[in-house]
Length: 500
Ligand SMILES: Cc1ncc(COP(=O)(O)O)c(C=O)c1O
Image (tube, rainbow, N blue to C red; front, side, top):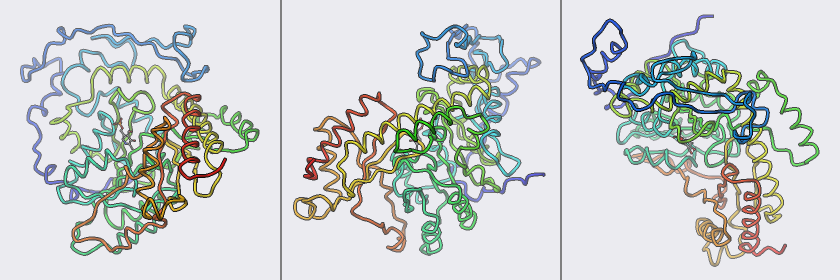
């Protein structure tokens, strides 16, 4: 079946994008690689002067039978993948010689890395139009900032989950963009409420251009959006003509469902550990990219949570006509992600192969499932047994939340003047005294109002007294995590004056 071409979304471009002329110097940079051309056109230093050659790295080799966190120094030689990046040679198909990666050029990303990622994209997503592609980025922070600049002007409006990743909200707000909150529940964005808000959008207020969403392993709420909601939201995006920006750094930190009963859990986990790649791929969450017939989804992927944050490497998937504007912007901003890192990551991934990378991702799934289980077990053990404290075990990402009914505090009406924010603040200060840090949900509130404003009911929340705290099970050892959550429990017993 021939897939359709993406639609034209140039009417959503920012003034900056419309004004940007291609850099004339970039139009001839490809000729630098042409052996028939003596290239005197640009300020490119001679690669002989690059002080790196034969850069070695050891990585564990698939199928990572000892687990992905096993110390490499304890692995036998056949379990180690040796990687040497040369200056000019390319001993392995996916290698990017340093003479090229450390040079100017290839703003879209080095071809070998892009080839691997395109293949990977085909395994994970089912994109329903022809002309999609990917570009490399310096991670999702960079990709999001670029997205804002490609589409938004000062005074524009974007939509975001009512609690969302504060840095991304702040990036938009600093550019004079209004971030308008969309109600969420334990499964993420509520499509009916999104549609109602848009159907009743105040005449004269700028219509939103983008929905910024973290569908899988949401930060901070830890929720994941079910497939049927995704399809509904996509339909609403078509109806109201906005783009969906799918920020997906946690996509591969999907876990098996939390099972409270330990015996039942152990039996289930041993089956899942033996999953084939096909079963693993089938179990992954649906993505907005896989709903996309129009080319209106911009997906931001990152190696930060699956390889290492300091790689500062990620990629955007979207329709070619939109990506062209990103490349033009990157030519004038980051130019390209770090060449050294592109060589390293491409060399590693090509040695592992697509199947080896899936082994790695499966290993991560296993590790994070154990971490999440530890955290939720400890929360069940140590938190006060009261309906005022609710835990929703996440199925993806790095975060758990402790949801608290602030009105259950014995001094809610007196000391805290019926203000849930004051209870939240008091808990935050107290947990630090108890020697553990979790962060208040209020730090992640999507604040913003259009001009003229939206109807009051568009911002109504179901339970205004509900507050929450975000914690992670990713950052510390199992013992420290347990100790931290014990301290949290003790703090809440004390603060809410509950007898043990
Ligand atoms: C939702 C979300 N987006 C983006 C980022 C940043 O990702 P990167 O390291 O790829 O810039 C984070 C990091 O915590 C995040 O939680």
